[in-house]
Length: 120
Image 1 (cartoon, one colour):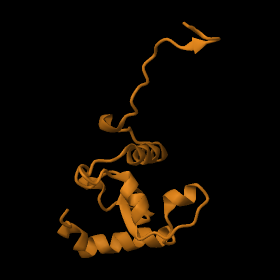
Image 2 (cartoon, helix red, strand yellow; image 1 turned 90 degrees about the vertical axis):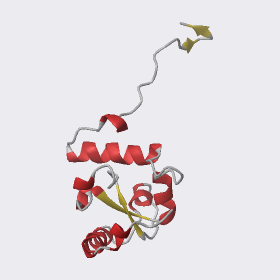
Image 3 (tube, one colour; image 1 turned 180 degrees about the vertical axis):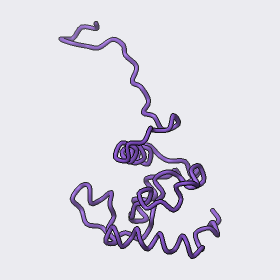
Image 4 (cartoon, one colour; image 1 turned 45 degrees about the vertical axis):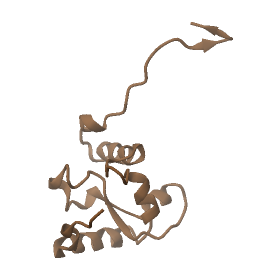
């Protein structure tokens, strides 16, 4: 995959550095689970190609390791994985924003359930 020249812009470099400094160069996803891991990538929670209006918003950026970043994206399609969508949903709740339809949680089908060995 070819690197987007947008990531070389001075404006992006400044906001990226701000996010890394804010997060003390630590992987914020690992930190949620009490682990300390260095961060070297800044992830757009709302993908910049779909939501360019949030590309430079600090609240939309999270510092993570390259390994963690790869768990947020399907590297074949560059779409968000379920883990990336969950981060987006958590961010929406934190920011009091509506969750975009595309990223709504899939409703679990209601149906028969087993209790005491019987189907109801």
